[in-house]
Image (cartoon, rainbow, N blue to C red; front, side):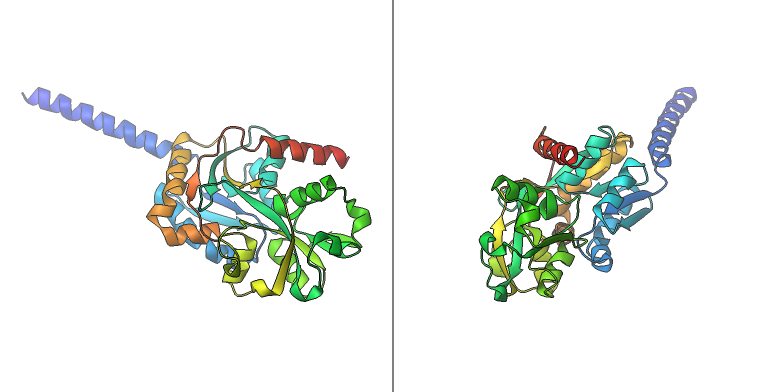
Length: 307
């Protein structure tokens, strides 16, 4: 009898030890969870807005977490390619840029959904309300601020959309330049440093609130902008919402934990979810297969054309 009890105890102990060992092994591969944060708003605001997510990741995987805000999109992209970051939220063009350099570097594991369940947003061009410029025709001979060379809504999509409409960028505008981010571009317009700026919005919900989400919404929420201060003079077609990406070579257990955290965040902590999203939405979902194929091809053509 005692031998049977001892045998059963030994088996149970061995099973527990093996399970615990396996549980510890994948954590040993990730000493620190390093999360990249792309530009678009000032660093202090970015870190404050995402502080709840840092806590939740730490609690979920029981590992130290560090957030790395970059001054531009390229910094986060290079950090992921070099294996110096584990994950990051990106725009679709940022992901496409990584994919074209190394298809096996990262994978998009979640994408944000809008309040109506759709998975897209819009590039918009804004001017000062008192400028008298109310449409794209009024911008001829004026200056335009792009956000960042790796921004979807702040550069690639509006540039492609204007060119598709027959506008030759270098001839149509008196000058163009990169402001360093979406927030910076809108501020440059308000300060009369540029006549217009490209940025992004969901373009759904209440206009007075800056719509449901986007850079404009964040600036309204932070009292940096009133909707009466600007005109929206151009709007793109629908752009796929940017993914949160994770390195492909990370342990499956870590990926599963992050997927569970993100896809349940809107239910488990709605306040944190809205802070991370920068507005309202219906939660994070797994992106459909091929969701970013069009963006990858657009990016491929842009890179080929710049050579």
